[in-house]
Structure formats: structure tokens, C-alpha cells
Length: 147
Image 1 (cartoon, rainbow, N blue to C red):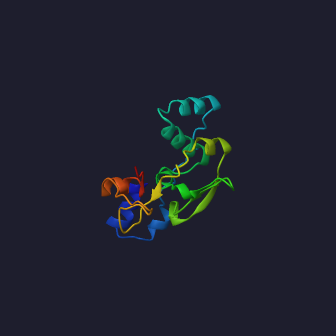
Image 2 (cartoon, rainbow, N blue to C red):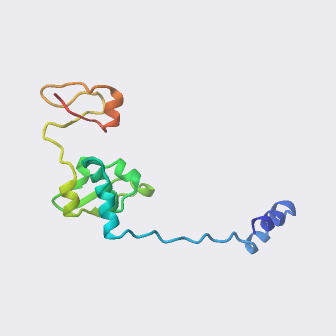
Image 3 (tube, rainbow, N blue to C red):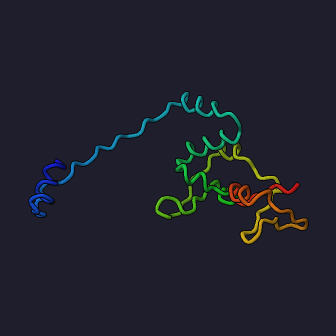
């Protein structure tokens, strides 16, 4: 079909054939649904708690990979049992339900973790301490552990 369309539109310079020779639509396949046993094996295959929480967040909420990568601590609302996705696909924000099992698995930040300011790599507390390196601070999203 594409060859006929190219022949008429480009070679013969007959753009009116563009409407009569449309490209065929791709058939969309439905995704495979995992059984309960397969989901359990997938979650049990995680080598540590961080990876388990990551897999549970991906599968339990249906978030996209990039949305999970940009998830911040303040995006998890344990009171209302919601996860706020900021600037998801198309730059839109949305709220997703948070299951009690996922909330239990998600790591809670210790009270001694503090947010760095954007202007400096120092912690906003009484005893400021610079982050190890600017690259480590960017990779951690600005969260540092003051020791």
C-alpha cells in the first residue's frame, strides 16, 4: 500500500490519491495478564527491598517507568492512600491509589534525611554538611544523609 501511495503522490504528483490510499492501521495487541503465582514469583525474585518496592510500585499502580524514576517522597500521601504523579505523560499530573501492602513495603525516610537547596549542595539544618559530590547529589534528587 505504501508503494502505491508513493507512486501516485510523489512520482505522478497526484496528491488527491492521498485520501484514497490510506496507510493500513496497526492492530493493537492486548497485554498479557500475569497470574497471581507469576506476580508472586516476580516480586520474590527481587534481590533487595528497594527493587521489591520498585517492582511493587510499577505493577501495583500501573505507573510508567519514567514516572517511578521521578517519584519523590512527598508524592506519597499515606493519609489519603494516594500517590501523586507530577508531570506524567503529556505533562499532566494525576493521583493513583496506594495499596496498604505497597505502603508497608515503601521505605520511609529516616528523620535525619534532609532536602538540599537548589542553590547550594548544603543541608538546611543547624549543622550544614556539603553533599559528597554534585553528581551524587543530582543522582539522589538532592537527598543526602548528614553523618
